[in-house]
Image 1 (tube, rainbow, N blue to C red):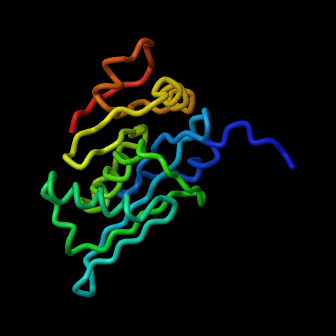
Image 2: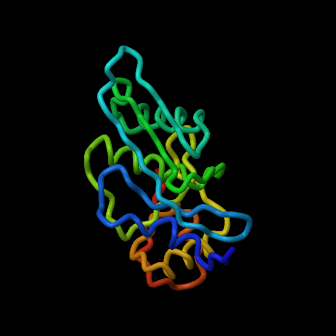
Length: 174
């Protein structure tokens, strides 16, 4: 057995290109931040009822976020099968990755890649608002340490930041 000093680095190293439907998020394992890749795939449904599949996150959370996208962003995902996977086989039960799930899904649906140097985090409410997440400083330091250039976070978290980061931090409300 050998120690893994930086699990984030191992979980995102195989991401060489920048495909549509891929997004890096920051999750917490106890008090340690871990950057993880989320992958989403949307495709025209073959049957009358769209299929939803979630590996590594709660299926009901995916369904809820798809409903928010349809209602608040006007995306027609009712005719799309939606598959979501947390790379590395991790199970994440944290609302801080909601915005990343939405970003990866929209990226796949529109076939537009998310910039490879971007980390996305934030909880998404039923009305489409982006809610603050805990331990934001630790999450940002981990992203900075791994060489990311941009971080999309809740606007309320951005207003409360006390430190300066080498990241381009973008605050979003909805």
